[in-house]
Length: 157
Image (cartoon, rainbow, N blue to C red; front, top):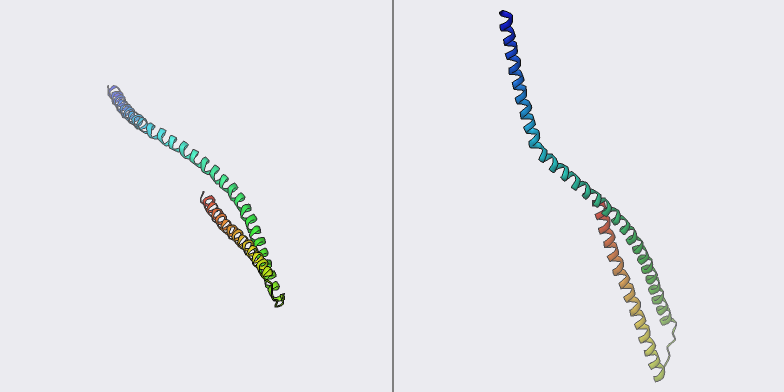
């Protein structure tokens, strides 16, 4: 009888432990079911962020290429600007030398008219050269700003 009552106690204890374990398993299953939608949402967010990262990398590469193109454009404009500045300096030096070397002459009315025409033509050409130089400088500054902006965007990406 003692063995039978001990066996019943063991059986009751095992049944109680089993019941507790089953309850814990059911509670864990409920928690897992609650977590599934959150996990699905997180996986969706991760996939979305992965796509954004890929797009950002493509954008950064495109910006690097554009920066390279802009840099070569800036170099070309810088070279053109240097040439225009040299041409302007040469024209100014020639004009100054011509003024020094001219002896004092008395010109006839026709010669004065011709001189005025040539002077006006030279003035127009000089103004055009100055305008080209100013336009090249503006273009260079715009390209430099673009290169700086693209470089900053590429660095930020």
